[in-house]
Image: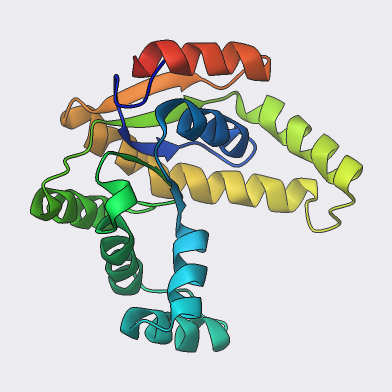
Length: 193
């Protein structure tokens, strides 16, 4: 599959442990578009010392969550860069309905409307077991069953409205995140064209 074929302006959604990171790498390699994650955008803006990056740094240094306004400002800076003109894979943004609406306006302004929202769907119990196993292998003491279930609950409550938002706009593509990395990757390639 060569770059520029099929869908190249993508929002990637999926609960913790759905395999987003692994699949994101394969998608950006196949499509030749940048992988843009909220965390990476924030760190880059802070490092570059942009006005919005300075705002973000002050909030993060205070141990607080970065506001939608700051995240959207940073997204605007990043999506306006030359490499994002041919496409992008957004990971971790939008997280809320307000962010999804702001992203829609931003992409309209940039003349780069979203092609789709790719949502990895999983069986919650299987993912809890997957994450517990990963925590054991990687020695992640903070990843216990209670914290994993809380992260899943937060994802479900915040992200369910996003699925409806993109479904209404006929942009939602749901792909099962269950099975081998290769099987999930094949389903994603077929869905994205």
